[in-house]
Image 1: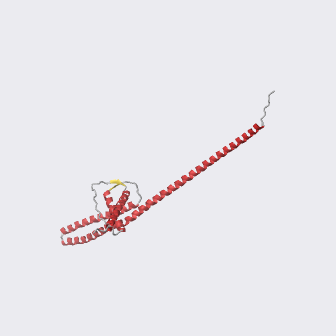
Image 2: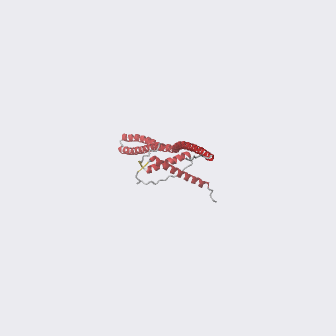
Image 3: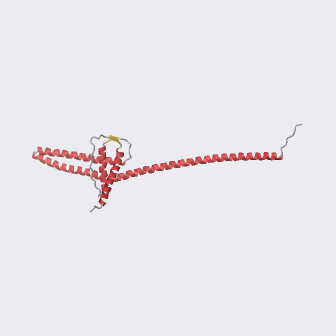
Length: 238
């Protein structure tokens, strides 16, 4: 006869307790897995939110930077306005004066021709030709100033052009000087230039180089003016 195997009460209760324990562990494992998935989803959502916020703030910073650059350009253009107006007015004054004198000289030349003095008439004609050349020079000067103003005010094209650096430096030197004189009538400076006439034209972005020159020249004028003011404050020793 085969023997019968019976579980003792202790073994029976241990088995039930083990089953409940396994069930609880499985339930806890499911809860942990669910919680882990929820946390991953939450982290993913937070990452997306942070990335969006970073992108928005980056775009806002770029917009602010662009606005600041534009404001600086407009401020710089405003500083040039007085200098530009002064330089253009100078050129127009020359044009007006030479045109007026030339008109008077034409009358004189007609009078000499009426008298039959061809030699004197030719001399007057030569002077008129010189005046016309000066009128053309100053007209081109005014045109160049306006062109420079437009180039300074517009956004940089990034395109390099063959540029006469001597002419560019001289242009911005005079504009900076008259711009400062317009803001401070007491400011004065003697400008002495030594340009290398053999310097060839170079490919640069004129409006960018112009702004650099303007800043350098303005800083130089400011430093010279401040040093002059400091010397005036010093009490001479007796």
